[in-house]
Image 1 (tube, rainbow, N blue to C red):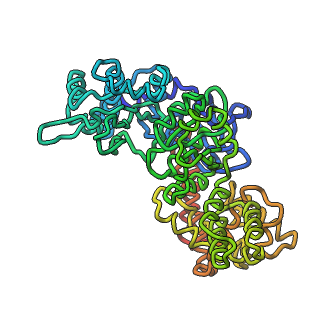
Image 2: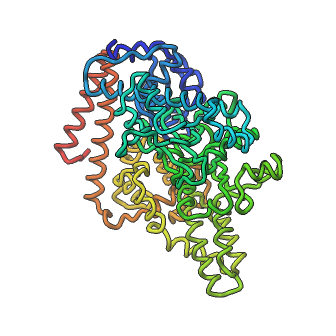
Image 3: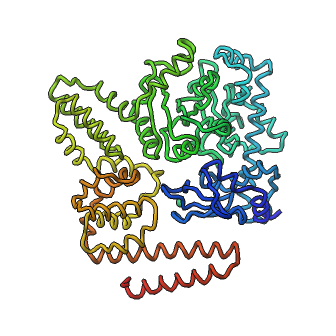
Length: 582
Ligand SMILES: [Zn+2]
């Protein structure tokens, strides 16, 4: 069957309202449904779902499409994975796609790697019951893992160097494919299983596919205790969270109050065994924006449960900041020195661990505690250094109320005047906050610099800014709320922009206004720059509308979309020709 033919049949068989309801609360509005958009921050719903056409569209951010694109974007997965997930749910069998396009071939390859990995996981699991696997069974027994847990996590054992190769070859896979899946490598004496002799932890993507393995050494003479699959076509560790697939099942029974983030596979397994079944683990790296985004689909709160002091290590701290920057509430559980969750539960019981979770500290509080340990506050120099470091850390908080609260704590601790600390917090603006962000390529695209400049110029009360332009360019979302709030404040006679921060602002504005106030407009502060920015943005907005209309036309063949699009094209042309004069 042709690829696009299959997709349209799949879309027909999928209930888009049901699908989207798993992520946002839809409210009936006439013949369609409305919700606050899951793809951008908003307070009034501009996201709409049309059950007849099986389409969704956000009038705020412009995102729109069908069940496949929705699943792809919300889960941050490949198109083919979204298709596969929907096909599984609709009990439709995925055909081998024909058409011979480069795309068609890639899709087939990906699906083939999935089935190869599934076969491998099955084989490793079956191995566990063979006489040769005594060492693996001993380990499982030593860790008190019952059969249902072994099954839930699909644990397995790699017998030797070649068993998996022989097995997979019989199933019709080639060594080249096994290599591509990250299962085998070649040495002078031939191909070998990279996980030989290890206990196997299948790593399952949030679409339910086995995408990689983690292997734990069982004998002491092996140099690396853990070995993970390398990056492959189907496995990107920066996008993967271990046990996220189980979270998905769990959420069907109701909302998850929090997710527990721990360090390794065995921590996750031990916690699930003890009934803490929202435990997941990152893949050994510092947490990434992509992982944070996926977690957010399940819960707004993450409790970090790393061993002893490892949460406090610098590399890890950055990961925790990434979670916070992604809008998650982050708390850090204070684990007893050198203990992992399994040890705590075994030695002190389940309730002791529950108590540790309940007592988890807010991230900033935790950071300040860690910081304080390194200084002697009765020493003058130390006290100054501590205050400077603490302010630097408090500065990163987006909520000014929270910032003020922590500054007050530091003022109490050190005896410094709160005004001085506030001033210091202002000095650190910008560079301190920007530095780590630019290193990280996964940072979501920042707001267009032109947009930020326009907002900053309006907030700063520059005389050349036309309020009408603001209203036209920022029709909704945070930007619109900001524009309205500033206009309101001006009407109330508040001229000082910093003073605005302390007035009663909508939540999103309260949090993000500082970022606009702190934007340095000096290099752009000019009417000509302003005019050209406005023109550029107006053109971009119109082009986006045209593209959406073109897509609508493609789907419906309704000429009204074409007529509207032509109207916009004319406006674009006019803007380009007359330099944007109204
Ligand atoms: Zn939106």
